[in-house]
Length: 274
Image: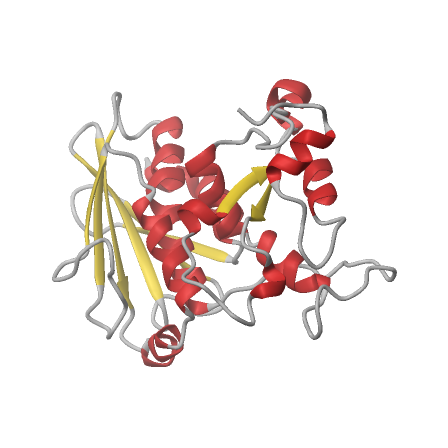
C-alpha cells in the first residue's frame, strides 16, 4: 500500500527539507516499504530513510548512510554549531507518540561521526497505518524532521536571493541576503512552526483562519539580531525563533542594523505586551 503514495511522500519531504527528494519502493520483507534519499546524492552516497509499516497501526523509520557516503560525512563534520543545533532541535521536536533513538548516543547531543550512524524511530497511530492520512502523518512528523536535520548538516540551501536594489547592507559585509537566507531556511520555518504554531507572534494573525488553505505565509524571525553574528552567542533554535506574518516581519526589519523587537512591533499596533 505504501508504494501507492510516492508523490505524497516526495511532496511532503521536499516542502519540509527544501531539497530534491527521490524515493523507491522496497519490496524486501513481508510488507513493502519506502526508501527515501536526496536526489543529488542517490541512495549510496548519502543518508537514506527507510519507512516501513509495523503491525497494523505503526510505522518504523530508520535513517542510515549508504556505503559510499564518506565525502558527505566529512562535509557534515564541518557543519557549524548553529547547523548542528537546528538539526538536533528538529529531531527533538517530534511528538510524544514517536519513539526515537540514536544507538550509542543521546538525543540531546548526537552527531554524525562515521558511516555507522543510525537513527531509529517508531510512530503509533490511532488508526491503520496504511491509509493516506497516516502515511502523510508519518512523513510530516518523523521522516521530515529526520531528513530535514540531515539537509541542515549537509548544507542544502535553496533560498532565492531576491533582495531589492534599494535595501542597504545590514552591517558591513552582512547584506540583506543573509537575513533572507537564514529566515527563509525551510528547516528553520519547519522547526519554528512545530514549536510555536502558525500564528504571528506580533499581531496575532492566524493566516489559515483568514485565507483558508492558502494561508501558508508565516515566516521565521530570528530574535538574535543577525548583524551581531560577528560576535556569535550560543544559538538556541528553540528560543531564538518566532513566527511572524510577512507584514510584521517586514516591519521588524525596517530598522537596521538592530530590528524592532516583537514588543515594539506590538506597541506600533496599539497592542499590550502581556
